[in-house]
Length: 161
Image (tube, rainbow, N blue to C red; front, side, top):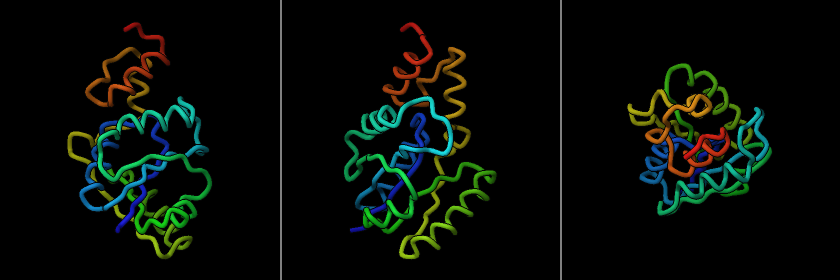
C-alpha cells in the first residue's frame, strides 16, 4: 500500500490544492494532507481552522485524511511511514524553491521520494495569497475555493452574507 503526504500551510485551501489532492488519489492508496501547525510565515487562520477547512473540503475522498504536523516534514513523513511527498508546481517560478526542498528532504529522509504534480491549467494562477487579497477587498471567490472557505473568509473580513 503506497502512502503519500501532501503538506502545506493551506491558508486557506483552494480548488488548486483540491485538484492536486484528487490527482494524488489516482496515484496512491492513501494520502495524508498534512497541515503545518507552525508555519514559517504569518497565517490568517489558526492551525485548527486551517485543518477544519481541509477536513471539510476532502470529505468523501476515499483514502484521504488530514492532520496537523509541526517540525520537519521529513520527520513527519518517516513517522507516517509514507513513501512519497507530493508537491505542486504551478509555474517555473515555483521550481527553484521546490527543487531545493526536494533535495534537502532526500538528504533527511533518503527512503522518501518527492513527486511533483502540476495542477489543471485552470488553476495554475491560483494561490492562497491571491484568494485572501480578493476576499479582503470584497471580491467574489466562490469559483476558486470550497464553500467552507468562502464562509470563513467572509466572516474573517466582515462581509455580510
